[in-house]
Length: 438
Image (cartoon, rainbow, N blue to C red; front, side, top):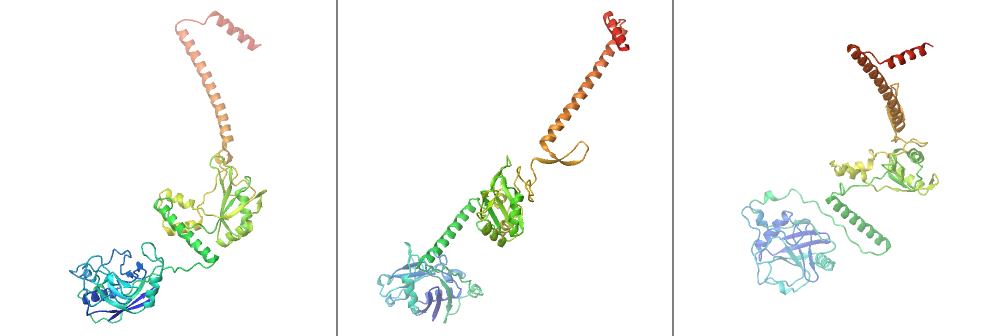
């Protein structure tokens, strides 16, 4: 009765001691049949002592026995320690338990012969028949201060070669239809030259960036940890303030179709901040523009061109509370469809095809009812002047009409009382009438 363990460092064949430990062999065999040990790590290796595995949690604190999975079973089963079976040979296989009679699923291999301190403490249920060289590889692996190997050693697959024991009741429904997918760990290699060291530095940088992105996602400072910067977006800086969006688009359009071209401007004054973004239709045109236009002179300024690392659009969308999946974030980062144009005096005022509307221009109704562009502040001043003149004329007319009405009411009131205007007033009125006739 034997079992084959396929590990990441080689194959091991274990012969089981059914006569000395029948319950332990039953537990081990049926757990292998349930694929319980697949993808378990050898989480503890003590040089020239033992290599421990059998915990699906890979911490040394997990694992249950076969009997706990069956109806009415318990998590642990009792020891089966025989005084005739000892740790005398290299490759002895025994149950790993902290306390007596608390055997579950964890077990260990001895990495040398005659480990007498373990005798009469743990249940021995097998020996390694093939694969002692694999135990030597485990024994030589580098470990940390917790005796965990730096390079993962994993059980990929278990196969029962000979099983004379019948399955307990209820086991059939627990057997999976196929083995779990194998976990392939990255294989470490020694650093022999500068190229290997450069590759290691690159991997460490990627790992650090991934960790930082995950932290920012947890702090809600990044929409998604797997967000990617656009591949077709160029960042242009050190530009002349007089350079317009249309000029920049005209220069870069010779490399391929452009989705958008934007010079970032101050939101208040509209002045150019001397940097901008150009989004191409495809990444190849973007790369060609980068190689050809970097360090070129535009409007007497030597510009700097680089690939954009900005995800500001995605951050703005995330900050406003719009839900966004990782695929949507990736698609949006590569699209660049909704980049807004900069606002300012120079937008669209150049010789090129700038699409940004002048913020000081607005469509308004003129005096003849026709729509047309006009300067906002000039139109406002003219309207104010015309409005003030019309208002003064209207106010003056109202004052004059009100004065005549009051004088007529006063004359009528005087005539009703039998009084006439004073003599001086009559004389002054007659003299004025003679002067008018003359």
